[in-house]
Image (cartoon, rainbow, N blue to C red; front, side, top):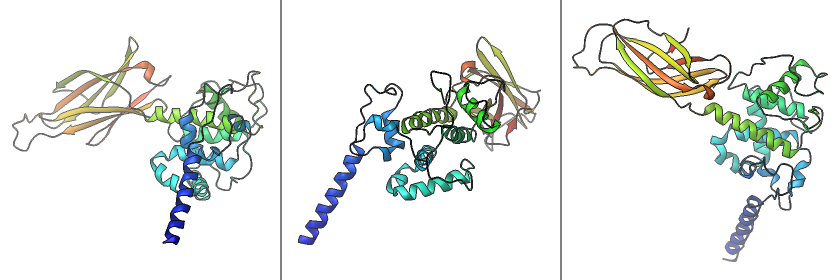
Length: 312
């Protein structure tokens, strides 16, 4: 009985220590990042920083590379948050390194120990983003920071891309300081912005159906676009062997830079339905706000419950 009571006491102390760890509140009042950081984001992806006695000013110190990569891993695997929270820190770091190497974000033979430079952090962030979207340099001569000219083309392009889409801002003197070690607070901000970009990519694009028309002539798989008064009109045609088919537009998703998928479902006629045995064409036009699409050119692809239609 005494042994059971002792075990219960030990468990209670253990659980209370976990609660205290999770309840650490960072006070950013007066800190330069006060209006930028999302405290819930820190709780979700930088929990290992929330130790008893931690102050916001402590986050101005450099962060270990393995912890930056661990946070990146948790962002990309939010659907596994419950399992990640159950694992030890060591296990999560090992899983993070394995996962990021498999996704070709982290070098196969790259070490995860030591500090991380600002240019390396940007490289990992841009490589992560480019798994989902293409980031094109419209002007290769564009130099957002005066101290990146001496970098290799690889690092310079990563930094330019990150600046172009707002992932990094640099310093007030127009420098980026690529060789400096990235701090914990800088890591939080850059990964917070990455999370926002990822969420935006995965977000459905609002649309409105402006016309649906059936004809007996047409060109199968044709997709056309045109702009009008700040709107983009996308018209696509689907050929069916008889009348009686039905096509419904379900959603529009962005899957890469300037590239979108329109998901449709197709319903075949009922088995005993009386239909015209003639080729029928469904022409559907949807309207999307231009501001919701990427700048530059764009293409659309139809993903249906039947063989996909692709723009030529």
